Length: 398
Ligand SMILES: [Zn+2]
Image (cartoon, rainbow, N blue to C red; front, side, top):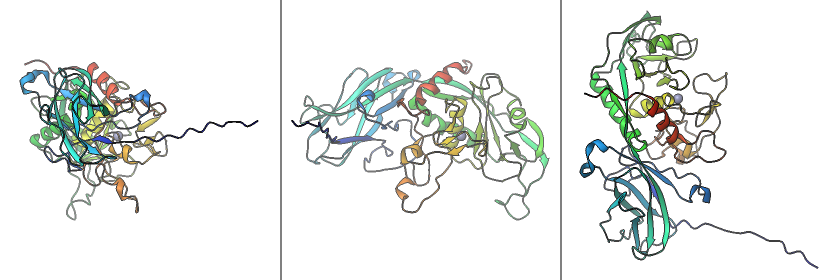
């Protein structure tokens, strides 16, 4: 008598795959800055519980009127199939997602990398299906598309003067000290908030700045131009000319985290509107470039990461690492997420493939997760930011 031992062997063929389309026209372009109409698919995990596919968040701004809704774009790449294989992209709910590229009835081009564009018309979910042979052929792959309406959140920007003992600024000319006020002009600040809105648009959030940027506030602190964010200086800053309920954001020369004054080390700091509903706020240092850092700090304001053991998607709470937390992972997907702890990557020889995650070399990405994968306590970010944005007041109507 023999036992029959069952052996399970399986493999998954991935004929095609959806990726962020950094360039508006060229599907071979692999990287570029964030764009509200080119969302980053949450392509982690392909278990049946995740409906076996990636998820693409898409925003629509109802105030524009449907005729002016923009096209959203996403790339499709052939992984395990011939370029000559005929493929069509079909919307599972044409009233919600209207495929515009390729043109109605046309096949995708016989190329390795292909552009897909569509118009999202109503909130809710639908699939973009990749069909083989004809538009009615078998579905060989699909992506779940989640369409979010835009929710406006009031944002008050401040540029305070910070008096205190002058500290040498090694990033300037010899003898320069850290100035008492941020160098940013109103236009630069508004430009950063526009970049923020490119990043949050797919997730259904838009930050609306107050018409006037407040430059009247004065703070008398230990060091000129510095906010020590682990002391009472953080709350004293966020109380300054505060607009209650709004997201108050303070643009300052530098942020200090430790007892020693380390210059140009921190791009921003913020706390959660859930954890500190009357004092929450965000601080942006002059070293922060572009909207990614500002968006990251607004992620903290919107209560990311909601699991308090984690400070970021890649760092865990540890008193020995105030501010950022202790590193717990460093993979290409974590580096693509908005709540990655750092403004750049630590390069490791032989692992250079991790240095470009689609937002140009050295730059962390802007993805918020849509999925809620079991065992990842940093997940479910889109639902969390939407929930918390909905608790914050919208700007007053004109
Ligand atoms: Zn952070």
